[in-house]
Image (spheres, rainbow, N blue to C red):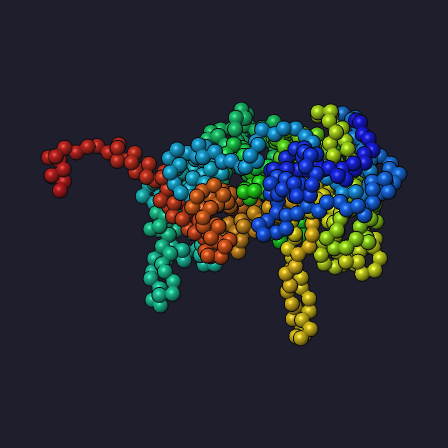
Length: 626
């Protein structure tokens, strides 16, 4: 590992991160302010319309790099416990503005846009409007196998009365079954039997719900399906093929036959398989946590308590989403400390960094940019991802080993709100033998710190501005978009009333990129839970069914966001909602999807097959029947 102390030499020329946040050198010619501003306006599309897009040049009054240099601190070292390789680097104590970006590998996806493969949708459903997006993210093969197994178990108890009219429970009725739940999401809060009520309201306040005629499933049929509903599981002694395959599948190599998560393991693996094939994320990724609520009334393996989450007790999923399309495409369930310690990379790098590496492993060398919050953010993960050809901007709070936290706080104390300080280091990695720039920034945001925050930073007095610490392997510390926020202050004319003022504050480009995308998974979580979650209308205490219901909501949210991002009508309705001319694109999508689930193409194909198989009458027999 080669490291060297570096100095910022770019007072009059700069290199920066250009289009789609990909590293390119900026020409050193055309040093006039007008030409530089024109370059940046064209190549840095991070400024919003109507905002000032000028780049301030360093003034002659600014101190030189030589005036700001200090003695370098002792090198930081962390070690790969498996291979014995050491990563060593030191932060240079120069506080001139950093105007470089990480220089890494070429990535194949130059456009950086997400992509969906609609050819992976079953051919029978490709012409549907919303259903094709739902089936794009659903493991159809496994759902087909589940329908066969549910039908077999149901007929073992009820015979031909399992489903009314002796019908077989197949993919058509499976989608109608899901459609009933989606219908309940549209009109939550009723007793389940009320949804099958066909009586007209005498006051005209409520229309008849009548799910019997809408779904062709009676309430008895619905309850029978609930009684035997379960997902296919891995089978001992069989060969592992694909978790999403419509047939028998043995255990994968990393799962034992005594698996506590056996009821949902194959279903969760199938979701990761299908999402990885059907969707390719854009350049910017966001990693965070999602919770599946547990009621504490049945034994639940691997449950966790995360106090900062709205649903604080249950199963925790570490989730990876595309920050451009807000589509979730990869996740890993937390199974408890004992099982999580046995997973890949944990012995070498610790639990948090190991999980980040496992989640990003399929995207080595693709030049993705990972936005991560404080649970994942650390210098170790930033360097290791960069060695894989993946850039990152990570929030650092508790995992501040090797991070110059104390020095940044000392330099930031006298700064004003919106100002920042930065330190940098150049590291030569084994992947390509080139030098890569990593820099640490601290920037003051608006607002007052509480006592705990003041104690953490060590500032005296009534310090203003909550600091944001980031470790970065991409973007720059040039001025970015103005950050808009709301300020709350007591109304001097009315006691107990707050006056809300809309304000702006400056921020660097790396901070702007972080704040733009760091909440992508949180937005997904709010969208899938909403006012009523799937497990609320399912009304079950079984943890495996609650897990299944929550993943169905993930499929639903992915389908809706794919419709908004890729479909022409979805784009238009979503733009109208954001502009205020349309109230709820989500409700329209859910209503149309529910109708397509009830009248799905599998039902039409089944009816066509039945008609083709029916005997053809001659004219004499037809006349006699008439």
